[in-house]
Image 1 (tube, each protein chain N blue to C red):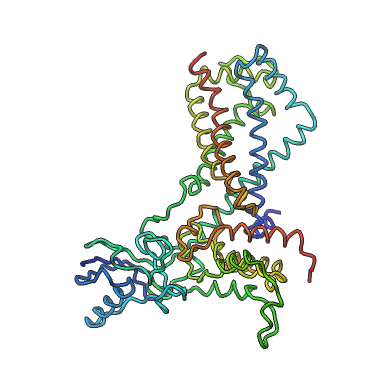
Image 2 (image 1 turned 45 degrees about the vertical axis):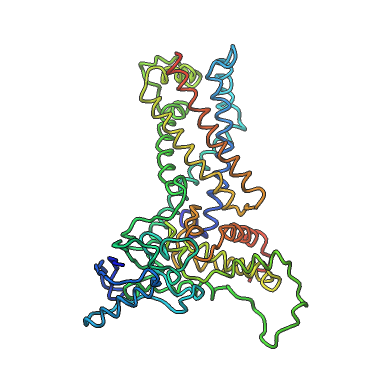
Length: 230
Length: 251
């Protein structure tokens, strides 16, 4: 299967990446929607967050969706790496000696590196939450999270953001990097799918810009709130 | 004007290349870039040295023969300019000009600044044509084409196949070239007939020859001497999807 995954056309690989990327973009909105309940936006926000987290970990439709989501992440990352390696090889053994001076956007040039940083954050994120849910690791002892720990993510989050400044900083940086990744990725996904139009492309680009600022900012507000007000 | 040159010299595809420094003391700002190289070569020949090999033909920006990666830009600084259209007045007195060949695995160096661009011909041979019987020209109004489509096809057809897109792309991707060649045919009624087979065949050949994958940085569009637009790449992707899911004829 891996072999056939490699031999498919360059454009097919790009289309797979674009479709999965757009899928992950939609998922991120759902994730943000739930996360915002961590903030005191209403009186019983903590209960609502826990209820949402409970629903996400028990509902069978969500469980099926979770498998699809993991596959989407892995395939998106896999093809990102495959395409990058092919691209490095395509330049040949001798690279340019003079620095390239072509005007291109910073976001587009470093998309593989922002992707790599996001992947590292994803591993940390899994270690902190998802692996606890799977029962692979347990929360830090100092946090004194009662059992079953997957039912007490709210307490864990509050503990992490209020006790671990480094965690909060990594979290904030990760979402700035994600914003940079998405600014390019959003537009690029539509271009790769062939959806380029004199009238609609500027609209898509504008939505992409708004999304890549608002959504990461939504995630960043949470640790900032705990740093400043708790 | 005085200029310093740092030029990539390489005997052939198998030997290792190095930069060699030259200086020219008496160049006119009105000289074209290639005339300046001619002057250098005359000097080298007079001194009994080996002249610098570089590609050139029409010297009026239409043949696609000239190349050269000059100071970090394919075809040098300046928008929509081929190297032959570049003039010494674009540089400062005493400036060091670094000249390299196109760098891509699919464009191996033949000698000095000349690279083998046969890969582009191979892509065209894979499907960049229409299959019609030759004969006398048919009546021009018998096949109707929309003005907008004819204009767009013409814009795509203005690609001279120089390879600056590959040279500029950080991934050495040929997608701007391939998409322009696909578009110039697919936009017109005569080319539309084989559009599906064409896109599949040309993309497959492009992959086989080892060009990179587009990561939408649009460096190609920024450096293209003919202003070929990335909308061509979107069109190619669109046609590719159409061909993969809609192609009904299978051998």
